[in-house]
Amino acid sequence: MLGAGVLAGAAVGLLAAPVLRAGATRYAVPAGEPWRGCCRTGRGLRGPAGRCPGCGDRGGPPVALVEAVAALTGAAIGAVAHRPGPLPLLPLVWVALFGVVLGFVDAAVQRLPDALTLPLALGTAALLPLTEHRGGVLLRCLYAALALGGCYLLLALVAPIGLGDAKLAPSLGALLGWYGWRAVFGGFLLTFLLAAVWAVALLLARRAGRRDDLPLGPWMLLGTLLAVLAAG
Image 1 (cartoon, helix red, strand yellow):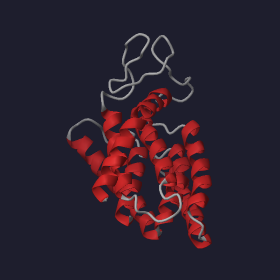
Image 2: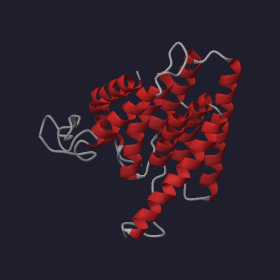
Image 3: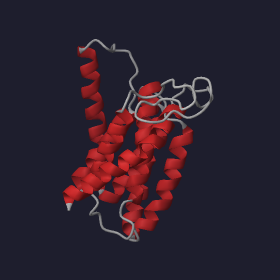
């Protein structure tokens, strides 16, 4: 059953990959610039190579990378498909879909745009009550969203962390709260552990300096996914 869920999740991830690639390409622009379509025609970039159907030029993430990440994310979701409830995967799938796009956008331009984080938050707030009917658990999700959002907001005021991270945090906190406080703490700690390991690796490889800003969003999302897998 577990193997079937993993394979089914990977297949669904691959099917969603063209839409996710288009989103990762469209929103990966610096603040103040219009959303991207294509180099000249304005049509979407799609397919494993991310090529424009109009002019053939390629843009966005590297070849097949979005597809690989989408498949791995789908496989991870398939591994926890036994989560009880009438609609067990909707919140997790919703966060995962936006998460893949947000991760690529942040990695490319160090930005988590409101056009993605706000619909993610609204959708998460709407889907969790459809999936979970226990008032105590929903209250925990609310508290976790407020706690994680507050932590990142405070960090944004005193550390080199963007407000986009603080806007992403409530959605991740609500999802982690669904799995319990241990998942909330685990996701938070894993975020900074993964980010620290990546920063040290870049320093050792001389691909970044001590004062360079590095995106935190991908590690927030990966830490959340790992915490969900551990809890599931």
